[in-house]
Length: 303
Length: 303
Image (tube, rainbow over all chains, first blue to last red; front, side, top):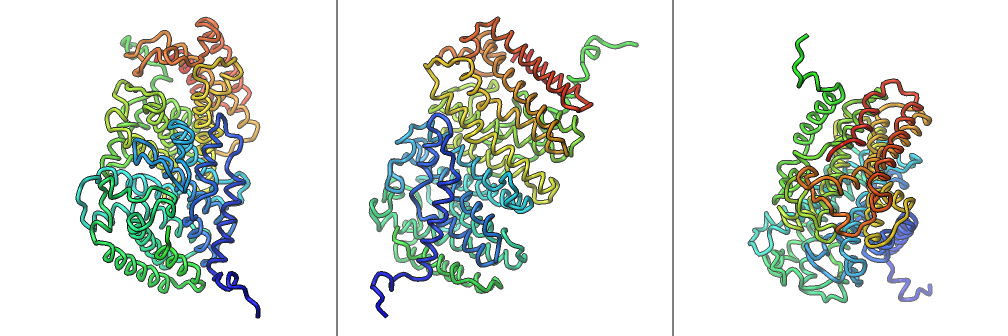
C-alpha cells in the first residue's frame, strides 16, 4: 500500500460530503435563473452560489439516503431549503436588520447590488424555492411535492424562521433565560434545519415513529448548531467565519456563551448532540452513518 | 313592486362582489396567525386585513365558479394570492423601494411597525401563502395543491412579479417605449392577476384551449388594470386612492399617461378590455357574466 497522507486522511463522510456539496452546487448553478431581468438574476445567483457549507441540503440528502427515498425529489428539496436559507441571509444582512457587510467572505448582497435589489432578490429566492418543489414535469410526484411545500412553508414562516427572527429583533438588549433563548433559536435556525431532515424523510414512506425520532434528531442538531455558532462568534475570527465575528456581543444580543460561559456552552452542545445521536439510534433506520457524522460535523466545525 | 332606489341600484355583480369580498375577508381573518411572536402576527394582519378591493381573490373565485371548480380549494387560492399581493405592497412601500407612507388609507407597515418588522412580515406572508395552499388535512387535493403552488410561485418570482419590480426600479428616469412598458407591467402586476385567473381554472379540469383563452383574458385584464392605475394616479386624489396620488410623475417613472396622454391611455384601456371580453367569448365556458363584469369593474373603477 502506498497511500499518500492526503488520501489516507479523507474519511468516507468527508468524501460523501464533498461529493454531495458538488452535486448541490451544480444543481443550484443549473436551476437558478440566468436571464432574470434588470440584474435580479445576478443578485439571486450571487446570494446563493459559491459559498456556504450547504448543511441544510446535506441533511435533506443524508436523510433521503437513510430512509431510501426518491433522490430526484430530495435534490430539489435540498436546493429549495438552501434557497430559503440564502434569502434569509440576504434580508438579515440588510441595514434595517443586522446591517452586515460581509457574508461568506464576500460583500453582502445589498452592499454589492443595492438595498432594493437585495430585497427583491430575497423575495424572488423564496418564491423560487417553492417553484423548485413543483416541477412542471411531475418529476416530483404531486402528493410528495405538496408535502414538501407544506414542510418548507411552515419552517420558513411566522411559526418558524421568520417568527424566530422577530423574537431575535425584540430581544436585543434584553435578558433571556435559557428556555427563552432556546425557544427563539428553535424557530430562528432550528425550524429550517429540522425541516431539512423531515423533507428528506418525506421523499419516502416513513412511519410516524420514525418521523418523531427524526424530528428530535433535527431539533437537537439545530440547537447544537446554534450553540456552536455562538461559541464561534467569540472564538473564531472573521476570516475563518467568512462573516463578521463578535457581532452578537457587539450588538448586545443574548447568546449561549453570555448565558453559560464558553465551557458551559460547549458542554451544552455536547449534551444536545448526544440526544441527537440517541434519537437516531431509536429511529428504526438502519443506514445511519451519515446522519451521525453530520451531527458530529455540526458539533465540531471550525466555521 | 316597491323597490327602494338603493336596493334597485344593486346589480347582481355588485351583490356577488360584496358577498365574496366578505367571504375572503372572513377567511383571511380566520387563517392569518394571531399568535405569531414578538408582534409579527400583528404586522402581518395589519398588512392584509380591512383593506383593498380584493381583485385577485375575486378573479380566483369568479373563474372557479365559471369552470365549476372546487370552491374550498379556490378560497384558499384566493387568500394565497392576496397574501402575495399584500406582502409585495409591504416591501414595495419600504424606504429602499418606493418609500411610501400611506397605503389603503393607513400608515404603511414600516411606518407603523418599523422597517425590520415590515421586512419580516412580508417574508412571513409569502411563506404563509404557500402554507395555505397545502393544508394538512388534504382539503385541497394534493395534485391540485401542487399545481396551485406552481402557478403562484411562477407568478411571484423572478419571471413574474419580483422580476417586474426589478425592471421598474431600473427604469426610473429612463424613457421606455410602449412595448417595454407593457413588458414590465406584464410581469409586475400582470403575472399575479393572470395567475389569479389560472389558479381559479386549476380548481377544475379544464382543456388546454380554455386555459389559453383564460390566460389571454387574465393578461388583458392585468394590462387594463395597470393603464387605469396610471390614469388614476393623475386624476384621483390620495383620499380616494387610499395611497399617495401623483407618485409616478413625482418619481419620474414612465407611465401609460406619460406615453399616450390621458385620452390615449383611456382608449388603450378600452381596447385591451375589448380583447379581454373577446377572449372570454372564445373560451368555451358558459357562465361568463361575472368574469365579464370583473373586466368592466377593472376598467371603470374610481380607485
